[in-house]
Image 1: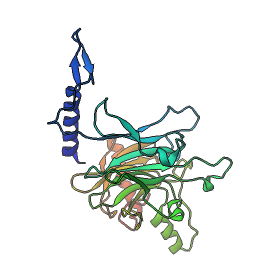
Image 2 (image 1 turned 90 degrees about the vertical axis):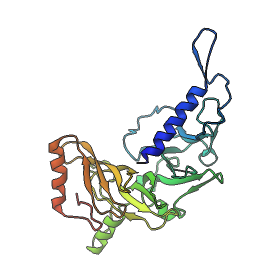
Image 3 (image 1 turned 180 degrees about the horizontal axis):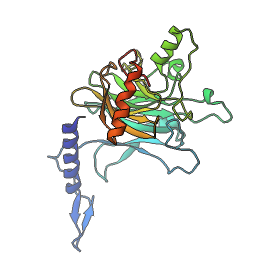
Image 4 (image 1 turned 60 degrees about the vertical axis):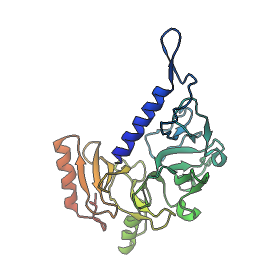
Length: 290
């Protein structure tokens, strides 16, 4: 999971924090008290989401939830005195929602999900969806990864993460391969609901950096969430198990969808339930049918 990189980043931020502290006359520490940045210390930019606290009744635990007023901000240095700038405000006008920020391996690009304002009185199927966006720091450009409006609105796309080969893994309600299987069986396409029947199931998909080649790589009746990459190239993600009591376990899978394995479970009994679920058969890319 890029542990070494993050350890170096944490060490650099700690050094910056110490460099920004100076003692006042009473012996206390003054954070960011005006000392110039240490020219020897390598500065790291910091990106973060800024929003007002939710005030409505929307359940933010639901992946399709929407809270207006979120934007992505950037500081060129990890220091309180560094100026910040809103890098999405030109698109959002302060009215969109934003979540799930990831950084590229070279540190020059940011990946995240944004959703436009909801349409008053519109049916759920007519509402704008969560889409994957990317910001390039070297060119100061912002783009939606899937350029086609039609393709972008096929489902909700959240929690994007860069793969080492430049592709993007994300969690989505598209259920591309599941729907293709329905067509092969002569059935109409429809997105499967989670086991609570409250929202469409989010499962893992992979796409090229330009938004093409979208393919479903995990199959689950509930949600597969928050993918990240391990040092050996496998994708690690959180799987919501809701068949016999709600719980979340860590699984791993290869980017092609093969080699699905349980990594951790809350209890031995939960682990046994998770492994036995594969007795129902494997999906077309090697994942368990749920």
